[in-house]
Amino acid sequence: MAETITMEKIVSLCKRRGFIFQSSEIYGGLGSCWDYGPIGVELKRNVKNAWWKAMVEQRADVVGLDCSIMMHPDVWKASGHIESFSDPLVECKSCNQRWRADHLESDKCPACGGELGEARKFNLMFKTFMGPVEEDAAVVYLRPETAQGIFVNFENVVTTSRKRLPLGIAQIGKSFRNEITPGNFTFRTREFEQMEMEFFVKPGSDEEWYDYWSKERFNWYVGLGMNPENLRMREHEKDELAHYAKACVDVEYRFPIGWSELEGIANRADYDLQQHSKWSGKDLSYFDGQTNERFTPYVIEPSAGADRSVLAFLVDAYTEEEIEGATRVVLKFHPSLAPVKVALLPLSRNEKLTPMAREIFEKLSKSFVTDYDDTQSIGRRYRRQDEIGTPYCVTVDFDSLEDHQVTIRDRDSLAQIRLPVENLEETIKAKLAGESFGTDSLWAGARA
Ligand code: ATP
Image (cartoon, rainbow, N blue to C red):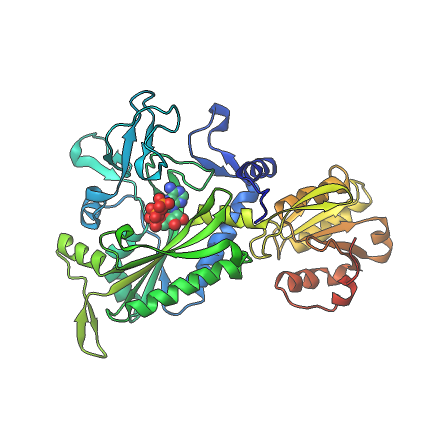
């Protein structure tokens, strides 16, 4: 990552081009809450779809699930969240600002230099009341992770899916944590989306599967175009491990704020199923019909943040290039993540060009997310498409009306070629899929 990529640049691009806006902006915003705009929502959906495809659709040993956000309060007693899902909080004696003690570099207040009080445990779960009465009996929590919904459905899923172990159950959904110090844009927020998978295995095979998933998850990011030099694996020290975890490794990304966690892969042993068996009184052990053995499965959990992944993909794609004395900002997204795949840009808004351009748009938009833009100069429109990472721009000009050919421009090489309209869709399809195509020799040397 170049030194010059700052979080400010990413935040400003996201606002300017409709990736991410501050929540409730017209009311002055709400701390650490963000909204995905028209371009951002496509990007985030592409990231989640890529995860679901790799983790569920393309595997015979993983199935999906979508659980409710509010669950029976005993779930959080069993999981240990009520007892110990907390961070150490300290308060400044001078300015009363509150900080997360384990994130501070010195023992003076970062805001005013004042003296800090004693650290106390602060539970991160959001509490609310279910139904029309606000009393202790009606307290429910917003889930701080999606994983518990998976554990409590383990038996339902095993019985109905007719699958044997090893078996994974995957879920994408919102989680909530009342973080003491959220910040760094969408890196740490109080409402966020997770992509989690619990992989249930026979005890004894857990270490092998832990290694397997650690590698798979690293490779997933690389396969979607992330520069491997900006990724690393960091194994947790014994004293960092949650009390139930046998091992944990983080996939870290080199964000502008430094190396930080993108995803954690943990060996949770049989802690969760044992706890839920104990608290619910339901036996959650598994009977292996082949070996005639009964055991409580061990769990390997790859747990990723959808918003953090989006942020990492944005940072990784961000490129500034000097071209003819001007700086071009371009997001070099992997084609499958690009929010818009093709932009249709008639040379000008002209009644002769519009029907042909519209007709091409109608056709392409059935296959790809396609943008149509006929305002402003073509230079400005290219700049916008570069900044949202659109791989291909197609221009329709007056010659097109005569020869039925259009110009297609490649985002990364800036090469432009003319080709017959009837070849357009299959050319774009092949290019997006990374396949070679009949027009390849034309692209070579066609840099604009
Ligand atoms: P951290 O140490 O950064 O607080 P964690 O180790 O508590 O994170 P996990 O409980 O392992 O995080 O959650 C799994 C993933 O969920 C994280 O790797 C991250 O991508 C995402 N995540 C967790 N907390 C947040 C948050 N407050 N905002 C955005 N994403 C988050």
